[in-house]
Length: 231
Ligand code: NI
Ligand code: MN
Image (cartoon, rainbow, N blue to C red; front, side, top):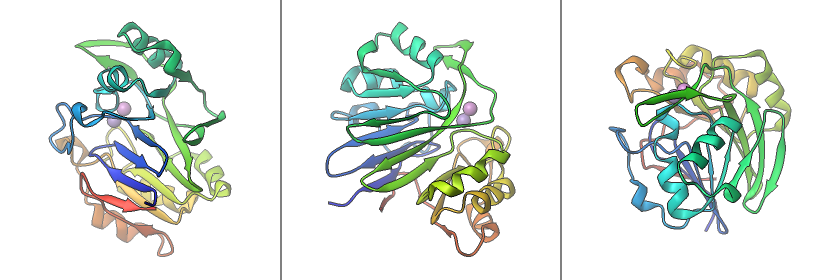
């Protein structure tokens, strides 16, 4: 089996290789476009969390407790997860600029420009730095931007030769379609998959209109929740 990338709705993705599986920003409970539930995660190697907003963190505690997967996140999200009974030995705190090798592949943390807090159980706690990730699995490089505005430093991703960039296009909390098209130009991946749009009324965007704005030599693939792509 080749490595597959699956869109799980909103900003959540699963990467499954022959040897490992990982999930990014699990938000299924309360997500109108969720294609799976916490119960679908029985064996999972790793979970990467970009920040503490509920639409990224919602099902993280349940999945981490149930699978004992490795968790990669910032310092404040780590504290929160520990307070909720996640095994501290499974958690790796990473900061922007850091790279680390894990059994499933390599992770590099990239900054994200976003105001964050930890939103869980009706509480709001201070968050650490929100981030994005460059995830290298089986020689495929995937950039998950997290929630971010367009920023100058995205240009530096160009030299990393990203295969697939997962970019938010919904606006309000993140880049809108125009800004994400600019990001695609700066990063210049082989392919872009839009995310973080149409889940809520205030992040409405048209992915086909976005696709027309992206430079012609960057492919745009619009995935519906649950759809998979072979890398
Ligand atoms: Ni956010
Ligand atoms: Mn968000």
